[in-house]
Length: 330
Ligand code: KG4
Ligand code: ZN
Image 1 (cartoon, helix red, strand yellow):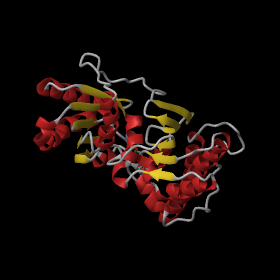
Image 2 (tube, rainbow, N blue to C red):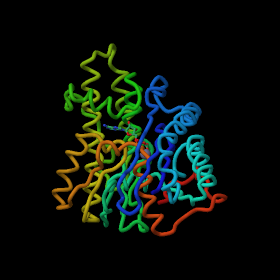
Image 3 (cartoon, rainbow, N blue to C red):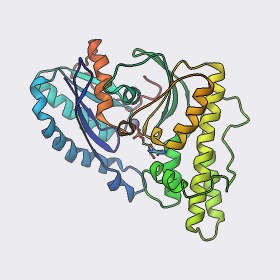
Image 4 (cartoon, helix red, strand yellow):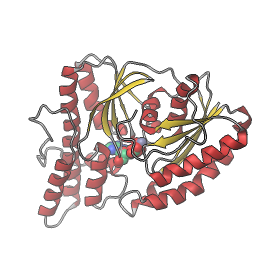
């Protein structure tokens, strides 16, 4: 079995996965969302302190598997340096104590493996990764051959939900809150411009949409509950139209064989529905992760680590470090 640790942002999580059967044996996550909500976003120092409290508690529960472990896996990048460090320090201590090797895992590659928890992996796969930090299209031909084909020039999809939620004083994380509010609103009430609609540029962009929403909010003298519902619905519709439109342009140049959506924001049901229609038009089956594994978790890190273990891809304790500047690496 492999014990995996995830602490790249605001979720403390540990999992134990069986190497041969790929079955998840143990999985626990303590989320810090409520602690950061008052600040409207993640406060790195607070996040690190909360990881230092939560990770040992979870580890204690996972300790019944210690004598069956063959390796320790940990997220090394990308993420917040102070929070990644919490996981890496714990992983190194375990590696010394149990005399087993270390596996450093790329968090984004981990998100891809959220699709394959308790399962065999499927490749080739064209993947839309929509999280708080990233909006990317990844062409994954195999575990060792993954390339970023498209990304955002500014804000990410999830980040735009977080920022709009903050503007409306609705709390953090914005994604699930905005999605719930949007259900009560009219998505055609405000015509926000779809970013880069008339451009062939294969790139995402969310800062313009975010500013358009800000201008609309500022123009309303006294925001009523109904205005908030309508803003959320109209914003969400435009944000999803942008992803869908850009993906359609991309699929015309590179037809997907299999298509998947991963990352925290892949839990959004309107996004899933719209992209399901798009994938169908291009005759590609669409894969999504179980809702339990869309946001950050150690189960996906452990599942990804099995592939590294099979490749003997271990990292020496002295070389296992967090990578703060790891954009574009897969
Ligand atoms: O993957 P994740 O847990 O953390 C990162 O690696 O960033 O993604 C968190 C992001 C947040 O920005 C959150 O607002 C967004 O995913 N999110 C959503 C939804 N659920 C989470 N965005 C839109 N709709 C949702 N239902
Ligand atoms: Zn993530």
